[in-house]
Amino acid sequence: MTVGPDDRALSAHLDALIPPRPDGTMPQAGDAEVIAFLRRAVGEKAGPAARIVVMLNVAAPTDAVAMLARLEISDPEGFTAFQRLAYMAHYSRPGVRRALGLSDQPTQPQGYSVPAEDPDMIAALVAPVMARGRAYRP
Image (cartoon, rainbow, N blue to C red; front, top):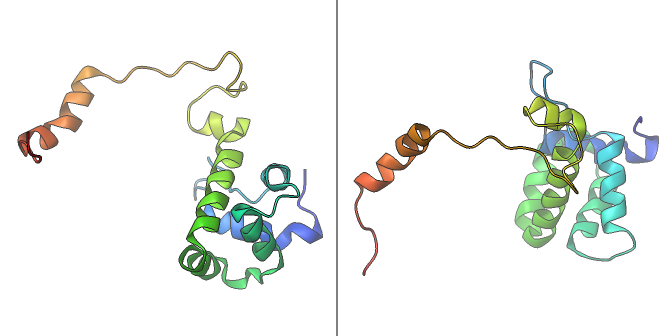
């Protein structure tokens, strides 16, 4: 699906929020599928994410990163809700899941297999924390 003319500003802001990998192995977020997901998710609701979608849809996309930064400060609740929906929409797409090494099959109802972490890797990650000792009162 291609992004329509009415969605170009929102698309540019989504691309700034989740840009593509420089090597082309991960797509950006501003495609029509993600936009359609956002529109379905906010629907007719006047909730926090809907405020951000409306603002980004009419904002000039020339400095999308600065606009996102301003919204994060001026409307943290709305920005967080919007960001969560954008991440859900983007990272649930089959091509993105494939790029992350996951199955491109739907995550539900059967789910997909996630390999267990190696115990040595977990031990190495936890070692610096354990070395600090107790940081709370018993």
